[in-house]
Length: 200
Length: 147
Image (cartoon, rainbow over all chains, first blue to last red; front, side):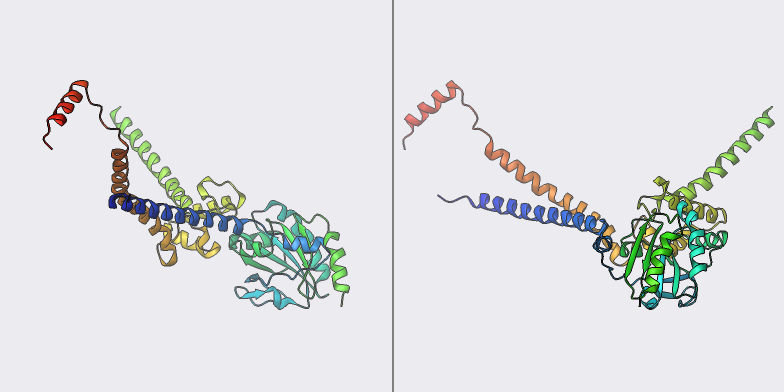
């Protein structure tokens, strides 16, 4: 006994409907997974540091907010890779960040101590309004240079969770230390920086 | 008395219109903007970054800048991600077109789905019960049927 043509057509339509529904559901789930993975913080830098390795610093290229030694003029782009040969104290900050205000004098002190000794204190102003950032630097008499990123791209590349965070990058462009949160004592910077500067 | 009432009404009307007009404009831009650190609309965000952007918007609204000018300035500072709604151009058009297409597809599917349901309901319906009188009559007619 064979099915009526009407039943066969109905079954086919139902099957097509199921397939289309499944494809749409799979697409939505896929988009959610991609979104979650993209948002989820990676920890490969910290994992490498904990294992005693020095991972390469991501090659961030950003506009200069305040220029300094080895950097192009304000508004032009600078990349971390162009600073190889110099030990870099990279400090992530923003004018709206309270702890950044408290640690700024310590970083300024470090800059005065290490300026001209093969080290560069470099700010990275994140997700901030330029005019507020410049007012912040003026208010706290900050003279070390800064780059600027209005987005969170460089924060993601550095696997940072927020501001303030500080990285010490050796002369070969590798991350030697990651300080999460506020720097409260200059020795948090000076001890590892002296070690990095002493390396060939 | 009438004059005093008129003056009071005029003052109330001016005050009542002028202050909210400023607030509404800033609020409208808040709704068009996202907080860059928490990714929520600016009007529901109280993060320090959001507060700084709200101040930025209020200053520009007070200066008489248009919504487009302020949004363009914010986009220049933070990139497109600061806009709560994607622009209606390029690849971002997908975000506007896909929901409309889905609604249209859903509306088009309604007749097919309802027809399919109706057919299934019809097929599954039990045969109507026959009364004893009708059953007897049917029996008689079948007996008397020449074929």
